[in-house]
Length: 126
Image 1 (cartoon, rainbow, N blue to C red):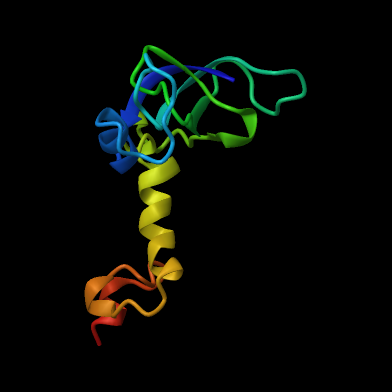
Image 2: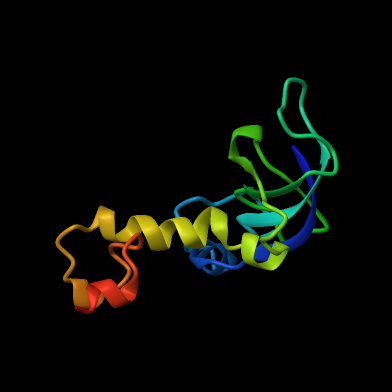
C-alpha cells in the first residue's frame, strides 16, 4: 500500500539501523522509518481501505520519506480525532509500551508503572 507521509515515528530500530547495529539490516542505501501516519495514495485490489483514507502503518523502512510503502496487513485506519503526529507513534512505540510488561511478567511494577495500562493510574496508587 502506498501512503503519503504526514508524520513518522522515531524508535529504537531507527537509531540502531542508522548505526548498522539492528538485527534487520536492509541493503543500503535505504530510508529509515518504521512507523508512519498519513493518507492512502494507492491500495491493492480487495483492500477495505481507499485512496484518501487516514491510516497508520508499520512500514519496516521508508517512513522518513515523502511516501512510504507498507504491506496491507500492516496498515490500520486512523480515527479523525487522532492527529497524524500522535498516530505515527502507534504502530511500534505504543504497542511496545503496552506489550513490553506482558513480555517480561516478572518485571517489578516499580520498573513498569504502565504494566496494567487498562487500569487508571489513580486506581493503581490506592
